[in-house]
Length: 227
Image (cartoon, rainbow, N blue to C red):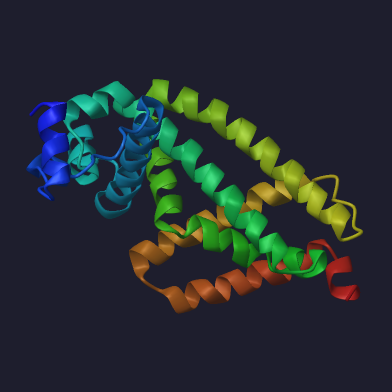
């Protein structure tokens, strides 16, 4: 239809069907679409790892759960190890947000007193279980193990530095062996998360977390003395 024809129809009160065509939304930038695809694949991998375990979490299964093609999956993560490393990195960022939120909800001293529970809240989530599945599986995958160790070393250093900051905010000094203490509590929480998943003994695990909280106060007596 020419411009003159459309003008005559407009004057006559006639609207061309073309005018009723739905305007398509602008296409999202490639970078945004790529980031969304990566996020969907990581979320799907966490879900599969939690439900199925590492062995059954194939790239095909993850692509299916994410609703993307195998080609799109391979474009984002050429190998399964690439996806697993991305999952660990994403979970660390998610946990960091979780810890920052918990800081905003309690005084520095109360936050330290409740740290075993906060740690449990992170590692017992599906994302925490997914990370443990990846760690255990890396025993038989040297390349994945090397990549995970390098990343985990950085995560541990950053996490402990943050815990030291929380001690300072509470007016406390960390112990000389504070890094070892932190490692013990994270390992204990992870072990209890696996036990709860296998034994389904949540009441007993809750009691164990209470014990960890008591141990923490004995290691840091100022947590008992200061209010």
